Amino acid sequence: MLTGTCHCGGIHFELPGRILRFSRCHCDDCRRISGADYNSALVAESASFCLTRGADLLTAYESSPGKHRCFCKVCGTPIVARMKARPEIVIVRAGVIDGDPGVRPQMHIWVKARAPWCEIHDDLPQFPEGFVAR
Picture 1 (cartoon, rainbow, N blue to C red):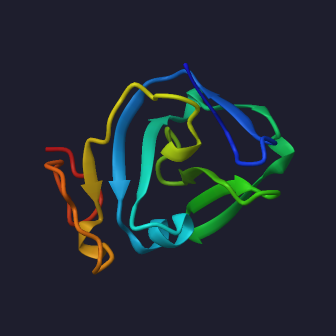
Picture 2 (cartoon, rainbow, N blue to C red; picture 1 turned 90 degrees about the horizontal axis):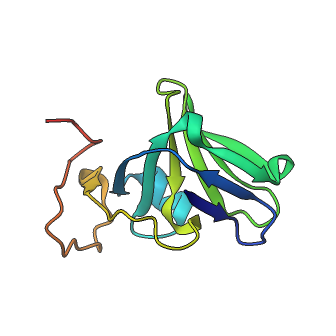
């Protein structure tokens, strides 16, 4: 089971379910929200995500129609994102996971939007937009 916390320690969660994929997203929203050249995120089954402490500290921002990015209202740590069109999944920010998640990044998504100064130095598959199952 994976666990995670925000920076101030007010929010704790568990993620006992299956990880569907681990991606590095280069879209404009993820870059701005994370403040980095890309955002590393685990896509998991939403039914398995459970807040164990600090539910009252989790707040959301609708970054695009139907997509809510949830973060700690005390320290600002991004925790998860949820999409109205995909209620069966939750996108968990990899940086908030405690310890080793047991999986490694599998792909880069939204590469067409990557920062012009960002160079990709690995052999992971690259998708111009979101992940497309082959």
